[in-house]
Amino acid sequence: MQPALPPALNEDKPIVSYSPQVASIHRPKMIFASPLRGSHDSLVRQNERAEADALERIQDDADLNDRIARGMLVPVPTSGSLTVNGNLPEDRRYCRPWTATFLRDLARAHQTQFYTSLEVSSAVRTVEYQKRLIGINGNAAAAEGDIVSPHVTGATIDIAKSGMSRRELAWMRVHLLTIQNAGKIDVEEEFHQACFHITVYKSYSPDQAAPIPHKHAIPSPPATNVDDQPPPDEADSEGL
Image (cartoon, rainbow, N blue to C red; front, side, top):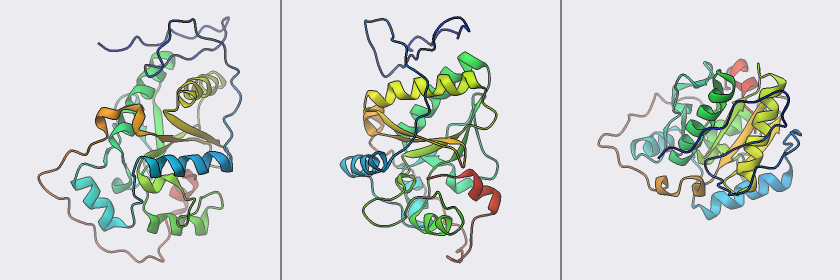
């Protein structure tokens, strides 16, 4: 049975969030819709949770395509309620299976409230790509070391804030904070790239943690020069 969808927002009522992942017999409490600002502690926690979930860092395009072929990464689930930034390369439009489930749930709930779609501005990255991104995006997290961008695990996606109304932003903050407080995700709201940076943990959808093997491997794309840089418009759309 599908979980009940959130009721439509009413301008005269406080903003509350309902999540299919967080069931309660109590009436929802009002949560102030303050920006979900990131912190070093949050980035450390995302790395610790990735290690606890046994998520390896995806090194390069060959590694990326191998994981796609083995079903460890799945396409971002685009639909009438979820789109992908047109500047994002085709082989970067992938994420972990439980992240895809989260995106479907979030997009469906958001569309029910506002009748508009969400946009994914960034998803999986490789360590090789993150190194190049650092050179042109001062907000990008490290690619190597103990604390790195969780995008290199495939569990993290960015949702663009551009074009969102104040009511949408408030709803997103409350809805995401509710799921974060349940320990299912970590959220960092970015302002330079204007996005919600969201790392989704296996616990969001435990039954999807195991990869589904593919019958045929996807061939690796032509080799690229590691000194090549992402196009400026693509780099501008990607955060941590």
